[in-house]
Length: 201
Image 1 (cartoon, one colour):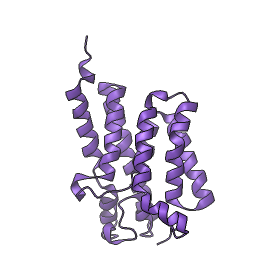
Image 2: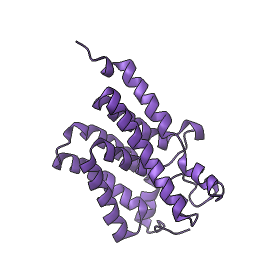
Image 3: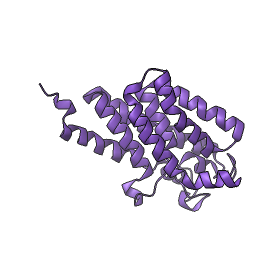
Image 4: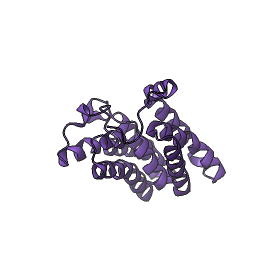
């Protein structure tokens, strides 16, 4: 008997839900609420946590981090509770894509790191914690946010195998490739030694 909750129309509905939730540009909302101006005209113009930190407001950056991570986690948790793990993976992936390519900003969004970490914590918390620790250790050593993101993403599939979450391995590969694609300019600057350090305005 076919599980209605896993049928194609239902999964597409969860994909749309995840994408629309992920598309909410919390970085821009937070900087407006804090009176920090237009985030598109600050630093790199990116809508993520690192660029919000360049405004000089750590509270705004923390708020953006939790909100961007939270939308990935919420997408996963709601979809899993109602429709199961397949729907959770699809909703989480689409929340990640929504953050990177939001319809509200003409598909010019962030790089997806906080949303990636948030959805991983909700989908497989041991893997999520391992990725967060990988990010933190790399950040402490390199002081480069983009390098930390690349290491965290690269390690995700390794942690999935080591910690016994092979069922989300394909999702991990897709998100890792997308994070590398979104950071292609950062990779060029890292190689050139010109990538800004964390906290630099």
